[in-house]
Image (cartoon, rainbow, N blue to C red; front, side, top):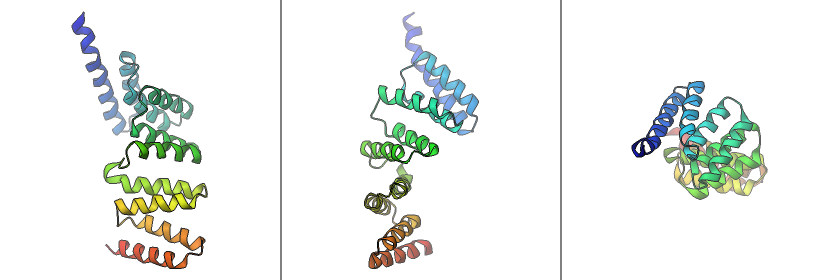
Length: 185
């Protein structure tokens, strides 16, 4: 009996990994089934709850996705990935403030969340700041994006546009020149 109990986490992990593979293949129904099997063995796995939430988000079952993300956070509130994907769900729902809040939490937990895509992730949150008319925060986000990925043309262009709308023409010109330099590369 003791060996069977010890084997359960490994079986749950196996189903989660199967779900991850199926999710990567865009087999959402299969991924959901695998994640649910994993959760039937270990209902308190934040990673699996978050993965199932991503499936529900892709299936546009947003209420279920939000509920699952909240459960994952209640179990382990220190996972930057959970907050990032939760923010993506809110983005799909058109909830700008909630998107910003989730992505902020992700970056507070891990300032380099996203690895090689980290610069692009900072640019994405900066765009959300712009949509919420938070230009100062957008500029900070874009500067961080450029610091992490100096040739990120979209970030340079967004800075140019912000400075243009605020009549900061010297800064706008400098950002435009950096944009053109990054496009040439």
